[in-house]
Length: 231
Image: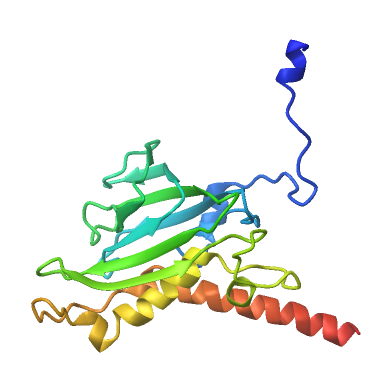
């Protein structure tokens, strides 16, 4: 075998045109934390998703846990007064805590731009969960588990995440996080069954998940409306 042949990069997948994006430009206009940077999230793909976390007098992000059957790698593309240093790279555990990673959320000079990349399952099912714990006794308040099997595998839920006729698919993590917020901010979800403590409302508006899920639905509906008008 010729050594050069072993180094040859195979042609790109015709269904996934090679793209590039400036993470700073893209995230300056993003509607939610964990916004996918590219339009590819099918089986076997690499999905980088960005987050911009900012401090300020009215800022509050809360805390929750995320569990994923696939690996996630985080890269900090710049930070100030944060627990993650600029340029820091780390692999999360399958169950990991999530917050703003800012040392003081009320400090307007604090910020972090992060990209979290997950490798979609190439075979079998993929599952995720979002979990909240009581601020007083740390008992589990809410656990929302959901099927995140990517498009292209038999377990993909087209009704929940989008059919082949839709131009944009819902990102499973954001859709599941919306369900988590609804459960977490209910009276039952705020009240700890272990100690009775009534937890503060989770500040979902800081994360922007619901807006992105709704915008995706609207964008798909607009696409179908245009096609219908054209026919």
